[in-house]
Image 1 (cartoon, rainbow, N blue to C red):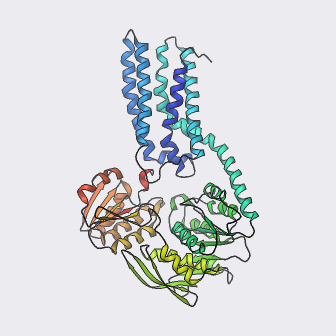
Image 2: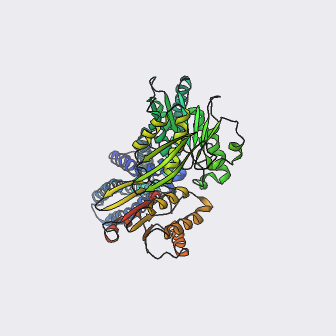
Image 3: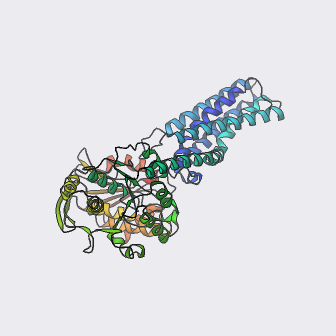
Length: 530
């Protein structure tokens, strides 16, 4: 390798800039278990790369302009130095905005960032050595920085793909360890909660109910991946009686993998819709995957399912006692009736067998009552009394970003930004209709619905037309589908469109007034391709 004195400068700058440039790429990959395929879908990545190209044109032009100067080596050094400083500064600024789902600097993320920096340094080292051999003019070494930024997406993708080989092996080690720990606790009640919607709400409600009698450990927030569950198992002690695992699925095999880790004694299936249809491929594939949660390990165990799924063959043909149906139908084993909902919460009668229980909750909407009923069915079957359930329901707090009511400066905000499926959107609109005052909705539409995406977003527009006074649409293709639905329904309110969520937020000062109700419905396109 033909390195010369001073080449350390190129290597050091490449190491630093390569690490900083990796942040939006790691963020994009982190949204779907570090899959390389997610990187080109990210608006954030494309925006960062466009900025890189602009910097290359500016500083590359300055470098070329210095070619004819007698002191061009000095000016070339300054040009490359300021280029590197600009790149680092731009990526620091790019990462500064507060995001709904910020980059989590986990050990895996940090390893990916370090690997990107090291590979960038190695690539620049090889490029500089090649230039030293092939060209006598040292001034030609400086363009390696511009070349690094130009090819960085491919370089990072290749780096991540290679690193993932080791990460998967490392993850399997943690997952097997978690499985061994859970299997060794034969006295531990292990409950799996999955479905296309309502998983976190049911998990939180169930944990609150069971905590009245048991020592409960539940996966926090939306830790519903194999590594999320494995990390939670690290907190499991002999004192815990119950372990509740929320299970997410975006692809075939996801639930089966989680079931092998947890080996649940009981399970809850909240419901099934077209969420993640794009990655599953068909509605039938979604149903098959979700129904795998019924494959519980304990012969004496049982599953609680939404009674809307009662006609599915696997559920309809189940053995007596293995399935507990919960919901609003008359055939439900645990049900609810006499519902009264308003903008401050809900009141309803929970029917636990033959026992009616009058309940009140701060949670908004009928769908939250449905989620509570699913949790109550599991808790009741595990020995929690009707009175203990009633008290737990009264104390339930809203899940952040899921129909969370926020009061601010005379405007009531319904934060439903984690909602991204048709059923959730319909429920959010139903909740909005309960409020008085001028109703404003901000949404980019629904994502990951494959071929059903246009129809679902058009239906969302039609439902908004009956409730909203102002609709603020963000983005392009999906927003146009929502707009078409609004027009089909004869929407007579005000329709505004924006290229980005930031642009919509900047216009709040012109749109919102004291007394308004603002529904923030799904802001996922922060990292999704439009």
